[in-house]
Length: 143
Image 1 (cartoon, rainbow, N blue to C red):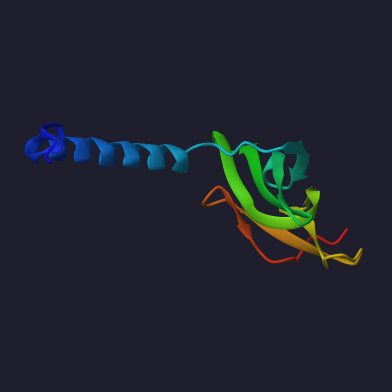
Image 2 (cartoon, one colour):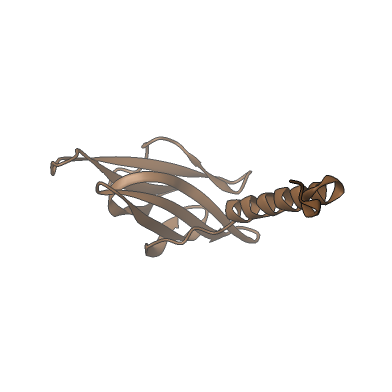
């Protein structure tokens, strides 16, 4: 049995429309902004940059783990925005503060079913030439 609506040229058009629709959907999802269950925000003062506004977005992914994204916004010859962290940690939100010419972030990683947690700190130094923050490990963030 043959269905004339899906034969020859009509099938090619149908297949092209389907593929185009799939690409359009995938592209749309790739550029969709994350919707976070919770948000925390504030400001930090960083030498050479001034006031940096930050937002910590996070959502539970189960087993007491949270997926998170931290964005920083500042002004240096124009408005700048940078995602400085995108990952998973425990006990949100991450803590963010300024220390001299660094933007500092700390977060907890906990052993499952235990209250023992390790705090990880990441320092981001401002690079004037590129007008962006670059990760430098944990140097320069001791309180």
